[in-house]
Length: 355
Image (cartoon, rainbow, N blue to C red; front, side):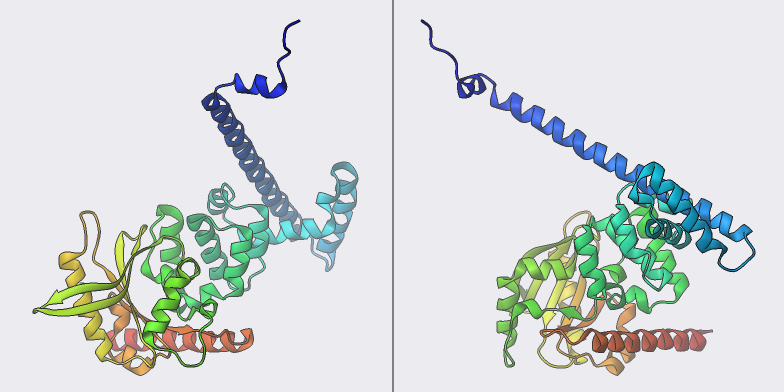
């Protein structure tokens, strides 16, 4: 009587590479189908919202829109389920109203889910809608990451929020249409470094060591695209040793990013030091296909008048504050609003002087 083959014996007859290849095909197809279904549903929700909006605009009397939504939801819920309840129809209305340009939204719904759009469309500022949608697409944020970015007021912490609306729209359009990332979309101010768990008193070396210890978290705060290159990068200039605190590379910008860490307020002398490092890197550090390096000076506190007088916003050097403890959100929001207003006023004054 012959021995029966067990299930495990049968499995051993299947070549591992065959099983692995078929698993990959199944997973890839599942993912592609899920993406296609998501894009189809999101497109449907936009078209429904647009059509209801058109109907409401035709109605003249007050309350007509709410009547339409209520009546529609009752009928559609019976036929197609709770996904078309009144609350969801209002989401669709808001969606079409927030993203009225079909050409723009159709490129986004291929990569963003309906949940992404629901997070974005209830933000107050139209530029926030454009910023978070473009960054989600460019950096592949999950819904959870998007929520964290919004909660940390990322838009308000980027230089793009301090620019005139037309210039901001232009940079966001370049990101959306050409996948062209600018430094103003990448650098933040301030940087949230509460994850370092530093005590009240610490040295620059303590700060650097804490960043390297929590490098993954620091990279997340810097943003997608940064790669760590070196710490204490040695530069020999006039037979003297100079050391750059941290050196990174940004893949989309194709540029080295030199970072200097400072404990106190920004000082004008830091600009000269960073310029020296950047010129050295440009001569000895960059490779073919890369463009000139950028500098980021992280200080515990900015010196806004010195930064303005030095016109650092016209250079490749960026200055930003870092926070080792998170302030209450209202305090942070007030501080960022003040910074945005001051920056815009400064730009307007400079434009008037140059006119």
